Image (cartoon, rainbow, N blue to C red; front, side, top):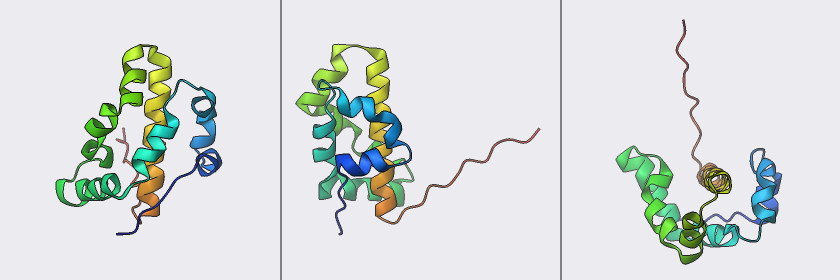
Length: 114
């Protein structure tokens, strides 16, 4: 399996990542732990398997392990809902970037017509 890597610089160049630069600038946010986790083969393989075999979102396969990381767990339990939401958005962007680099395409949701 090919393992892809996302760097801080690539994240900041991404169309969505650049809007989350405050997360990278916040020393209390565990962004480096997030990248270290997702830049490994095991989480990437499990995310692909989740899409392929379970028909579930890629992050569903790894969310427990991610939240169990000491830095991530400490941050999420600390409290500020707005900062937590920004971190969760950052996770979603990193997952999308990895899945796209692994060859997956985002399928737009169809909106109901009235």
